[in-house]
Length: 295
Image 1 (cartoon, helix red, strand yellow):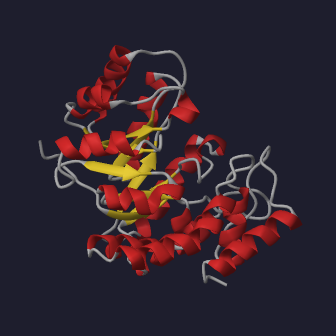
Image 2 (cartoon, one colour; image 1 turned 45 degrees about the vertical axis):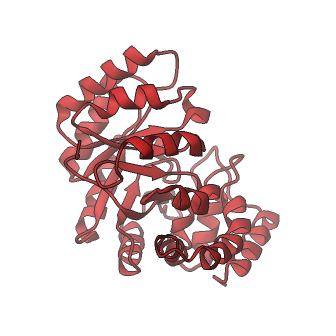
Image 3 (tube, helix red, strand yellow; image 1 turned 180 degrees about the vertical axis):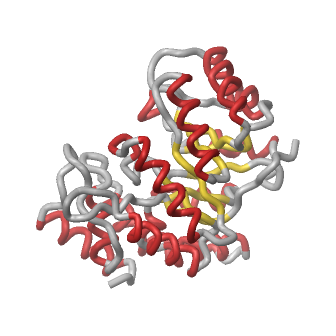
């Protein structure tokens, strides 16, 4: 079962830069994408949780995808397209296709639906005709895509893989035991599990940490693939404090955006009700950047 597109490599889960007046900084977004592509990223993921998807208007999401498209070159764009209802999600998936994304990253709908409902949901979305990546994030949605449901969904031709953010390495192992990473895509979305995920066999990653340490994440993946686990461990150990700090779920992605800003890249404050990083939080971010060798 080889899918129409198979993603491999590192994809930063992009932040969305904002200007001082709160408007979207499209030139800043393009500058960041250019940088990630210049250091070896395979593409970008736009309009996910790191990118404040829920706080963007429909017009801003479309403009952001188009901006990425202008500068991505040979890279791939994966566009977030999650919504509560099938109709609303289908609209976002269509927008992603029309704006030039290579795939839509579709978060499961939040609420009460069973496996049959999930299959019906993605069967309807498939009518748009763009590759779709499932987004398994049960902590956010209350729905877990287990092996049984994954097998039903991956049978839909337009479903090309999954971003696995439950943190279940046994689930990932079960999928990779049955499906080749050359035929489908299994992304890890757990920043704190990068090294274990690479060791299990993930060949693709959508990562918030890659906004600030793309070269290190790419090197870690390459070292694991070369069997140089001890060298990969050192990178993982040095990134761990930063990863824990910028992933603070109490005000995500405020600390992530502060880290990007401290590296001299376009970022801006998050949109309210998420508040900017405090002085104390900024100091923690700076310490994490130092330990990682980024400052």
